[in-house]
Image 1 (tube, one colour):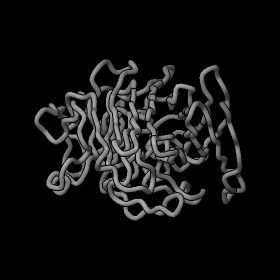
Image 2: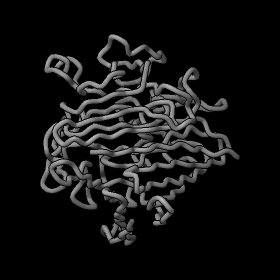
Image 3: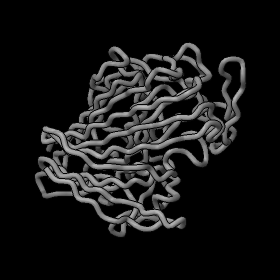
Length: 344
């Protein structure tokens, strides 16, 4: 196991951007303290090693990062209807950065911040701990918040994600990572042949703006049925009709317990990934809004060149009392986990 640290660049305020590379087993994961972002993931296959993460060629991309490539997002991931929510008799107004709604907490969310960072090693893996303080009123949210996010790589070819936060006033919290994967290798084509299984019997119904209606519907006999493994978008007719996925699935099993939520297999390379989460939901996103993004190694990312599996609470949870609560109270700790297990 090994940890390498280097300078990733200098910010306009003179502070340093850092790049860490973790090596354990046959995997190599790189991360930057800008947005606590994953920048690269080198994975073997039957044909050699590839970087299977979409990312930018340098620091500048991560400073703007409109598609959230590899970013840690919060305070509240996903969409909030009307860019507002009410809590304890008070209405909080947020940024409208997704039409009339809020996406991933607004314009200056966690993905746009420089996090404190430090590397450490434990018996089975190597890790980076990222810390961020978010002041009261940040992006419109109540309370002073401290987030501690750790990402690690183990000898067992697993990426370990640990999300923690405390706040001094009642506040919704929903932290996730927004990595875009392509198991063939970034820049090597689309992800339409990837085969997916999601451990979910129901999904969150949404309107045309991708805002939940409040209803949980069964996946059976719908285009959202991934209870058995199948191609992400199996034929041109479905692709034309559905335009890709940006949907939250209810993960079967007990929220709060680490349990499998999804598996992905890519038949050409033989690579597979299994995802575990303690959260109530997982968002499958097929890169529908990628619009000629200049990526690594001269690549350009367009629609369907990467997929995300964002483990999280349900979208618009602060406005839906029938969803599992994401409200964290003073004196308690927000703590969620995810694991990405790679094989080939």
